[in-house]
Length: 119
Image (cartoon, rainbow, N blue to C red):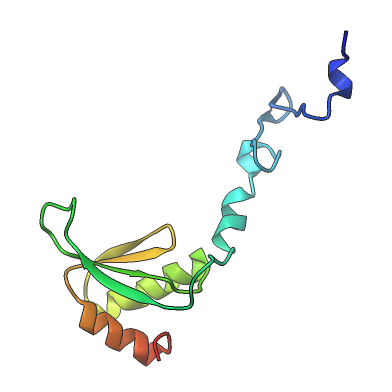
C-alpha cells in the first residue's frame, strides 16, 4: 500500500484556510500570479510584422489584424490604445494580435512606421 503523503505528483487543491488553489502556480486563486506573468512574456515571432484585412466570420464587417509584433501583452495593449486613438476606430487585443475595426491596412502601416515598428 502506498502512502499518499510521499507521492511527488500530489498537490494541494483546496485549503480551508485559503480556499481553492490555482493549478498552475499553486497560489490561492485570489492571489494567483499567472495572469501577470503571462502579460509580461514575449511571444515567439518570426521578426516580420504582418497586417491583413479579414472579413471571415464577422458578418462581412472588415477587421484589420496586426500580428508578429515582438511585444508583451501589456505593451500590445498600450500600442493598440495609441493606434485606436490616432485612427479614430475601435479595436481590441486578442492573444498576441491587435484587431482594429474597418479596413485600414495602409493607415495602420503608416502609423506603425511612424512609431518605429515597421522599417
